[in-house]
Amino acid sequence: MKRICPAFVVCFLLVLSAFAKNEPIVIQWPADNPAMKLTFAKIREESSYGGTNVYSAEVVVENLTSKQIPRAYFTVYFFDKNKVRIGQGTLQLADLDAHQSAKVNFQFNSAGVPTSLSLLGRPTEKTVPLRIISVPAGAALKVDGKDSGITPVLVRFTVGSHQLELTKEGYAPGGTPLDVAADELPGGSITVELGGLSRDTVELRDGTVLLGDVISMSMTDVAVRVDGKDQSYPRNQVKKIMLVERVVQQQPAVIQPAPAEPK
Image (cartoon, one colour):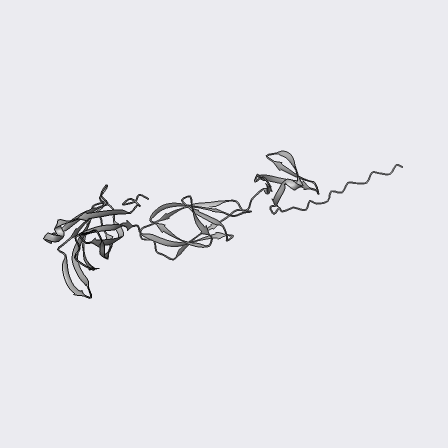
């Protein structure tokens, strides 16, 4: 899924004469490829107590992109003239449609008069929690190639297409594509059934794994048929053998007629 903004955190440090002039402060975020424009209207001092000043401002946030921004969080830090941080506040909004603007009431505390600010944060994509279940349970799950736990496991998916991969020792790998819609409801689950292996597994002590048919095993050797070729290994080189379940059908007895006695 294409992200609206880069995944890294961008920080601006602005020394603003606008503070002194009490003029609106305009910030485009992020600087290299702006997706949002934030306009801090005139900052007002609301009250003061115990050496702490309480300020407020109306902030107009505009979505500059053609995509909806489900939610965004920013931490705004304030500094004095010596670049000492003296206050901070949290600015957040949700469901900002393409090219839409929203007005947010912003309030922060400061231990002095701020002369500059920094903006730290990023928009976050909407996620939908879904429980991934495997049959049998206990499979290692990868989502889009990244380890995501052992089933059953709750995973938060972003809207878009994903690929699930599940592996469990003794079973054939399983996987499925998954499309998460923007209106997907939380609380759902996805079940993936793993198939049984059709071949035996022989793991050697050097890390080699053989998939084939174990033909015989004695006190000294293990014989394995791999791709139609029989191979024999000393038993002390074998670390582990996993045999698949095989259904043996009982063949009816073949009765040969007794030879006729000579007359």
